[in-house]
Length: 234
Ligand code: MG
Image 1 (cartoon, protein in one colour):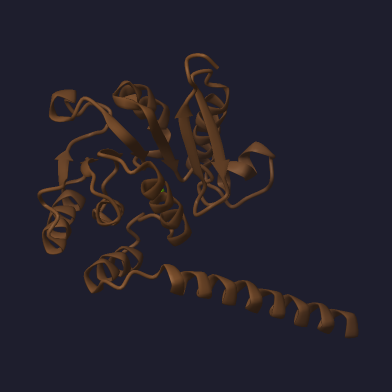
Image 2: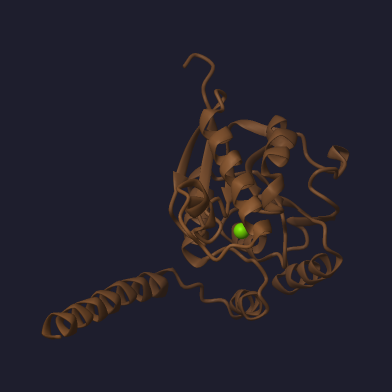
C-alpha cells in the first residue's frame, strides 16, 4: 500500500514536471496572433486534423532553416499549417484540398490573415490535380492528406522537389496505431484502422529503403518523416 502511494506520488510529480516543461516550451513558442490562435482553436474544437503543436514547431524549424521560395502542401484542411508556414517565411505556397467545406474554410482563413497573395488553394484530389496548376519546383513538399495515399503523393510530386529540397510526411505514427500494428501489440483499432496502420507502415518502410532519399523518422507530434535527396556523388 505504502509503495503504491509512493509510486502514485512519483508518477504525479513526473507528470507535473513533464507538463510544466511542455507548458514552458509552449509558452515560449506561442504565437501572439489572435487570428491564428482562433484558427488553431477552431480546428481543435471541431476535430479538424490540424498539425499537433510540437509537430508545428518542428515544421516551422525546418521552414526557418530551408528558407523556401516555394512550398507545396498536400492536404490544406482549414489552412492552418499553410498560414503558419507563410507567416514564418517569405515563401509562396500551393496547397491542395479535396473537401469542399475545408477548401471554403481555408480560403476564408487565408483572407482573414491577409495572405491571399502568397497562398493559393487548389480544390481537388492530391492524386490528380493538374500539374499545370503548380509551379515547376518546390523547396518543401509537405504531405498531410489521405494517409493511405502517401506513397502515391510522394511519387507524384517528387519530380517537383528542388535539389536541396525537403519532403515532410506528417502522421507517420497515426496516434500510435502504426507501432502497435508493426509489433503486433493489442489495440482497440477497428479492422479499417488496422488496415490503415498497415498502409502507413508500408509507406514508412518504403521510405526507409528508398535509395534516392535519406529519411529521418521522428517521434514528434503524430510522427514526422523528413526526407532529403541523396547527393549524386554519395
Ligand atoms: Mg497531419
